[in-house]
Length: 589
Image (cartoon, rainbow, N blue to C red; front, side, top):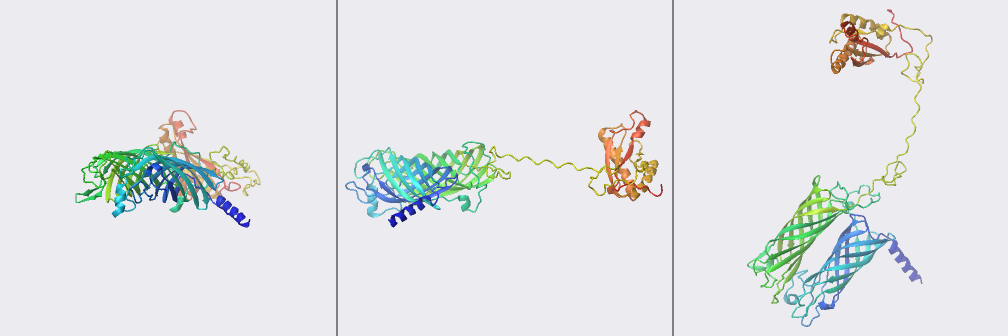
């Protein structure tokens, strides 16, 4: 009884102890698994355990693309056949996960598969193994597959279990040694393994901007000023030219199988930008139909004349911005190359071969419109078993679809946990402005507040004649120099200014109506400056004067003659502030 309770507790902890899937756009998916394969009876192969791995990325909440490859060696069961062959299916699928309590997930997937029933992996066989493989006429077949499974979170990793059904609509004319043909067939696979969902941006020391904010509503095709977003899909066709690395006449066992001629082919790509959008997980496939250069190429029937070359690659690309809408791309990964002849010749030799190798990419992506780009790539694929290097040039278009954006959050106090787009994100009403301060009511003190200590009522109301302070001076036509009579007027102001050191004066320059507005404004400014200069040269602090020009805007006389104009060519002097409780009369007065 006690043991049963511990078992229940352990299963509960396993179920709710971690997140089954980090399903944010741009999250990477890495996993390994063990696999049991039940082969279609028409293949005459024994069921077998094997191993495999998968790599993928989430492009939208709960949606991901993934590719996987597995490997085992099933025994041949047809009479006269001995030994084990190499079985290596390669799958690519789209998958949707249904989260359960944030700790587990149920998922459904569908995609394509290439099932290879022969090959020289992991190493070229020799002796009897080579004889057994060459007798095997099972080739490789394309098909579709469905996936159903679940995952359970265990902290940083998740346990994942899948059931997969592969359906291949085509077969082969023989299993070897004159054995029966097989047609359309189904293989069932069961997988169990562990899965890890690293955040690439955090993995390489970056910090996700606004990482705590919720995801904005997902938009598949909107204006995207960025080069890419986390989870953006890059989908597009391309045309390519392949130069096949061949063997020499003295060593026909090396080089591209069948010795194919360089030729043009077509294909397509799909990639997912990760949480750090410099990184992109990308897969592509292509087909090139070409002829053999001659019959010296190894593996193939000597009378076969044509080659159908297909390849499937999975790479991790790093995007380096070089301009506002241009990125330089470096990528590396794995590639599977398939070579097949369409000839019906059934003589000795084989009509197919596939190889695994490494692939490197260098290219450019040019943005030509919103979410549309031109891709130019150079690719090198190297196959270790056949020791050939295929060099490939590609050109194509890419559509940049979708991508996740974090919500911009409200910045107003108390509303930081809601999106800025929410109707509730409204700026609080501003506080009412403070009342205007009461100003000093006493004459000459209107520029200070009533609370200022200098705002004191005069002891007695004494009227002082300030004419000598405010009296104007006059100028000649189109002149700003101080005349003799103006100098006398300014000299009379000096004792008053010395007796009242806190007094500020505004000097207002004026002109008559002759001349343009702009010219007269400048002339008035020069006249005011001349008066200030005179007073400063006679000991008055320059900081006590404010200058302004009114040009011809403030005439004191409007008659159009010299008598009137003379009155308008003037400087007026205005007391701005006294600076004390009263104006002091100089002792000379």
